[in-house]
Length: 284
Image (cartoon, rainbow, N blue to C red; front, side, top):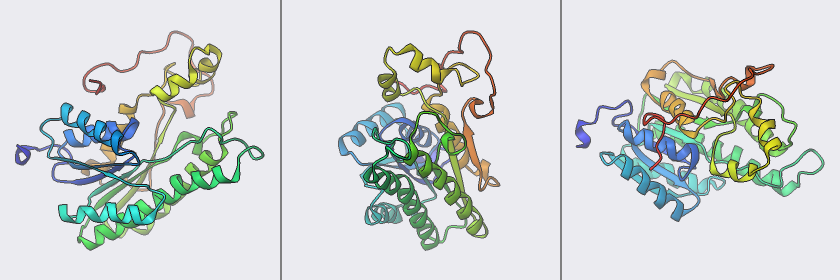
């Protein structure tokens, strides 16, 4: 029964953008498991319904899991999405996770202006809109605390010889935006933190790397553990930031990269295996 749920997010209302896959889906599963009422948001209705089915299969005791199609680059969409939680009692947590890295994103010369603008609209404006309407919701519903988590990237902290200029610039903007809002709204009890993931072991990445061993090694060599991260390992960090356990964590750039950004050289030897236990793996 929902009333018996005493998880770390019990009774909290949460929005997760980019909820149909990757970090967003894993976070939706964890939030539901920890007692939150979850609104999964993405651009694709079919993908959302498939993701919702997975959440409910893995967490049959979930309090409330719903979906909503939203284009985060459009403020009216974001506004309506956040306001839809007023009927739940208003949001308590929003994870502004939706973002893109376009295949045509390149360097200073090769990045087309339309790709720059598209990336900024989704990755920066989308986060700003989510933050803006989260603050309005928290105020409107007279909340004394709230957690806003924004997805940035390790490329906001270190440079990359494989150019992705618009994406990198957009994630740097997310860090700056998050830090400022954290200070501005601290006295209201609203916490703003960013997540900085390293490259993850996703089907998209594996398809892109394929059988190109040098291409794969060029990336894996930067990880001290010799492996890519898993989406669930990012979701665990988001869960902490969303919970009351992180009540004094504000304006923090949480880097979840296995030590990649701290490594000068990495150890020799076989890579560590990816996590496979039930606590860290939500595969069907």
